[in-house]
Length: 91
Image 1 (spheres, rainbow, N blue to C red):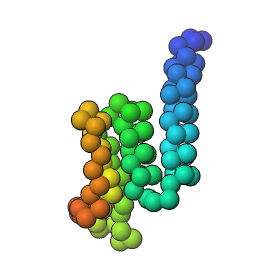
Image 2 (image 1 turned 90 degrees about the vertical axis):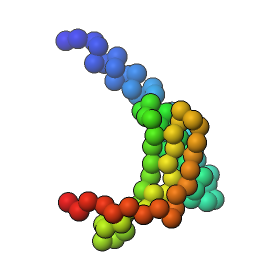
Image 3 (image 1 turned 135 degrees about the vertical axis):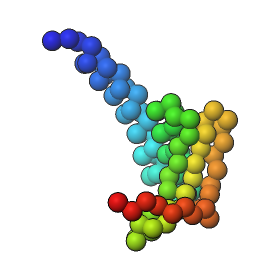
C-alpha cells in the first residue's frame, strides 16, 4: 500500500483544520453577520486557492438567490451585494 494517500490526507488536514478554526472563531466572535460572512469567504478562497468565492442565500421557494458577500483574493476585494438578486435554477 502506498504512503502517498496518507501524506496527502495529512497535508489536507493541516491546511483545512486551521482554516475551519479561524472561521469558527470569526463566527463565534461576530456581533454582526456581514463580518462573519466576509471571514468565511476569505478563508474559503485562500483554502481552495479560488479566484473568487461567494455566499448566497436562496429564498424559501428556491426562485431567487441573494448574494450576501463575494471576494476576489487576487485583488483583495470583499464586496457585499445584499441587494443583488439572480434567478436560480430549479432542480
